[in-house]
Length: 246
Image 1 (tube, rainbow, N blue to C red):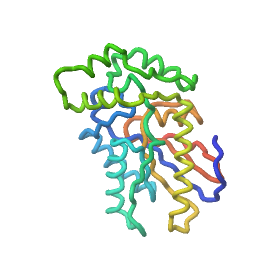
Image 2: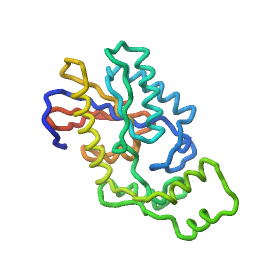
Image 3: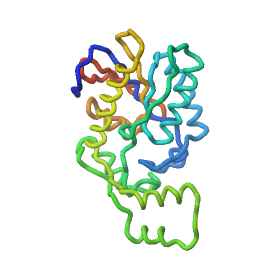
Image 4: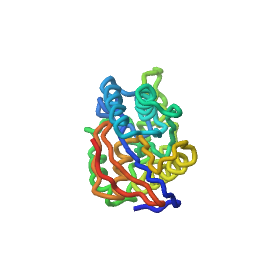
């Protein structure tokens, strides 16, 4: 349970994972790397939009990463056509809802990383643990000094990874920024809503591991499937666990 500023409005946060990305389909770890939705992911996002209509969603906020923003925009486009609103839903985004930065593991195949599986079994209990931050020196030199230019998405992501700070994150770090994001969203929606209702429904599009980090604050975490989610309610400055949602 986390305390924020006081508010009498009940905000329901429908926190959902983005649709399947191309990296998801290939079994690759993404972290902060970019990968667009796959055809299946687009279909999943469209199905999520139908659920968002049933939930009475009035606001949409996503991670700043492309796969989450793409999911959010598909949902907003559907809702703006299907539901009469006083004003159109324009998705917002924030880096605080991003996936855990996985450091040197980003872009690598899950099946080939025994260390990742070990980390994944411990990280929600030993919440200070972080993935390794750097590529092996030989691998860095090999990729940077490669004589043949390669403009494929995989190589571009690899170069982005080498040139980035590669600051991997602990569960504690991710959990805190996710909570900060929900606090900011609550303040933003209450400030800008034109509804006189005492209840607001907000769709939040984030990522599997990031959502598990947040979930671990309330219950035993599980890795959500693409577009599955969980419900948190916010009232009088407090977040409450509302359970898993399909």
